[in-house]
Image (cartoon, rainbow, N blue to C red; front, top):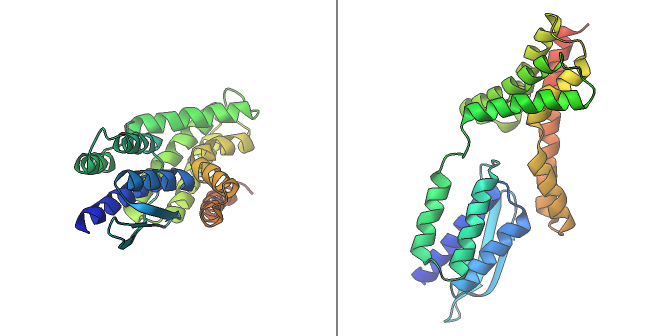
Amino acid sequence: MAEKGRLVDLCLFAGKLMVTYGAETYRAEDIMNRMAVAGGLKNVHSFVTTTGIFLSGIQDNGDNLMQMIRIVDRFQDLNKVAEVNQLSRDFVLGRINEQEANEQLIKISAARMNYPLWLIYIASGVAGGAFSYLVGNTKFDMIPAAMGGLMSTLFLVLFQHYLHAKFFSEYLASFFGSIIALALLHSGYGSNVDQVIIGTIIPLVPGIPLTNSVRDLMNGDFISGLGRGAEAALTALSIAAGVATAVSLFLP
């Protein structure tokens, strides 16, 4: 009983990491099912939502096992998703045992992001400036767009660390990023407000939740799909509210 209980804990841990760092619902369920079957459970069933994971199975002696785990935080780190996916393959193929798999999952969970924050900030600035140019900006207008995109990401990381309020942090990040971009425009750096604002907020767009929402809905996982869709919609609303507040302060 205790041995199979540890197996279920391992499967739930893997599923939690998958969902937490941006994997689709069906992918998390598939990994959990395969690991549980490889560990000796029968009649395995898993149910994954964006806020909780359930896993059940039958032991060799006929006893039922069912556990769940709560998901509180959600981030975007597809490298960790790939690492957990590879770990599950190694476990299913017998390359690693249960203890080794658990130790590796702990390392994956505790590992820092592959890219330093300063590089993420620079990439956000480049993305903001480049995207604003693609939608019709001039090269001169790329400066406030790039600075706004960089500062939006910087403020988002800062506010999420200290406030622990996702949507309010996104509102504040878009507000302060837009304020900086509009201040540069007001100082004479550029003239196209619309394109500069687009470049400022593009690093904040919830691309992964929106994509996963569509994929979950197409796969028939309506609870997770609607949940992720609601998260993406609220994120977009928070960003729009921040921009609207900034624009109302700067423009008549």
